[in-house]
Amino acid sequence: MNALTNTIRKFVRRCGYDMVHFTPLKPLLEKHEIDLVLDVGANIGQTYDLFREAGYSGKIVSFEPNPEVFAILERKRGDDWEKLKTALSTAAGEAEFFATSEKDRSGLHAPLTRPVLARFKVPMQRLDQIWHWDKKSAFLKIDTEGHDLEVLRGATGVLNKINLVMVEAALTSRYEGEPVFLDVVKTLGDLGFQICKIQRIFTDPARGVDTDMDLIFCRGGKNATA
Image 1 (cartoon, rainbow, N blue to C red):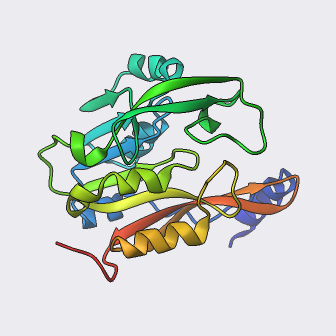
Image 2: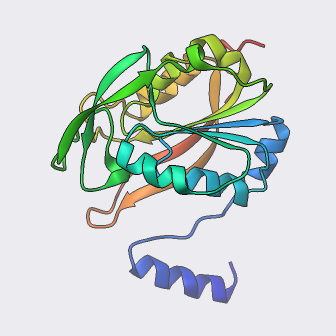
């Protein structure tokens, strides 16, 4: 690490953060020939920006059930971008949505550490029942505040089309019924995926502990199917 980098890192650490080696997504997308990105829990489109900045130019489908947030997402312009106002889970129907003051910390599970400002019903679908994309290799990104594994269980009929999965794995539960790190790793392993990249680690500066991380899983576990 050169002197300039070391100086910058010391400054960043005083602010409660750290610097890590950045590994771009593009080589992983190219290796797995990704031609479809499924953005589950899209919020206002941050994942769309992430993948476009990584050099991915193919189809992106974003799912966002919160009508207030979806209205913002719908106005955002982009290329080859489909937006669906629905949650994904294990069954079609309706689900109760818990809205908090933080739009990206709201979802289908009641939070344990922040107040719920509103509750309302949102539409819900299984991914394998609404799949209509003529694509060969998908990247499934899930960020649903505790509902990630339910999204996966609703995609079992199309897992053979999904080669990369990115989920947010919490070290301790932040929502009612939220699975934690080991639950996530075991479930993905049973479905035929293994960890191939840690994308980001989130830390609580006040407590000095890591809270959750974005994990990318690649097809190739013991139960992987072609």
